[in-house]
Amino acid sequence: MKNLLKIICSILITVCLLPKEVRAASFKDLTDETLSTEIDYLVEQDIVRGYSNTLFKPNEKVTKAQVAVMLTRALGLNTINIKNPNFQDVTTAHKYYKEIAAVQNAGIFNAVDKFHPDAMITRGQMAIVLHRAFQLKGSDPYYFSDVTEQTPGYKEILTLAHNHLIRGYEDGAFKPNEPVTRAHFSAFLARAMTLTKPDLLKDPAFVYTYAHYSLSDNQRYTLNYQYDHHDGKNDVWTVQNVSTAQTFPNELLYGHDRIYGQAIASDATTHYDLYLELPLRIGVILHEDDEGVTSGVRVTVKTTNGTVRAGEVQYTGVVILEERSIYSDVVKTYYFVDGIGLVKELHNDIVVLELLNRTMK
Image (cartoon, rainbow, N blue to C red; front, top):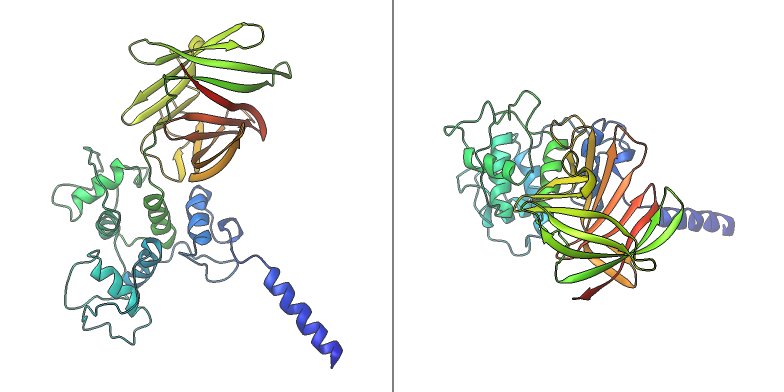
């Protein structure tokens, strides 16, 4: 009997120590790795779960009831003593009654007699729901070949595109009338939850002091970055070795309402080392197949609310970007803080730049 109790206790301890989260990488049926960051995020937040430790069923269609559950968790909606919306097809005994009532009371779905909890939600309806849930703003004349002013959710679709939550298909279509899949709704939801528009530029009022490790000569330097002037397009920052007063090529920072770019002065006319469209959200934001100045480069936002230590400061609310290029084996990781700019940069896990301090001019 004692041996049996020991075995049971051992099993219980083992189960308790097992990690609770199931990451997207462990789902055998999730073949689109470009969505793994978003799905990982929702799994970690306990907003979406797999059907098992190995299956996510990414191509299954999402029902209105499932959307209600995910939005309730994502928004932290109240489900206690919730007002009954009195849907004819959703009684208080329904499995997801509380979540359906919560999203209805929040004004996310239209007030109607029936909710149709098992009905699939289309991509156009998804745009309307996310627009309401997260009160998204902005609308550019974004072109989808199958979206016109007569399309239900037309304005909401353009707003989601404006905020880089959706891209559409390779043929230029959005397919608003097609049911949305679990993988796609998960991605769109995670992006909406992590949407941010940070100021990534350095503050010209400060001198920035960085520790720099040069991979070319394996030497360590302390560098001062100081704002010099605006050349009509970029903020020009001089870079100087603190110990020897040796100057390095100027850093150019391009800041626009919806664009951030950084380059060294010698090649700014042809290439920005990093070029981003704002606002940002988690997931792949630039793909190596995209045309333009970022061709051949994939940039993934790993988080918009991370933490990192640089110098003696522990920063929060950090935007962490990962950049991969088809032209290089180097994986670059950038850490940005809103209103401060770049605080840390890694090349293949080697710290090549780290902010030590900022001094008011």
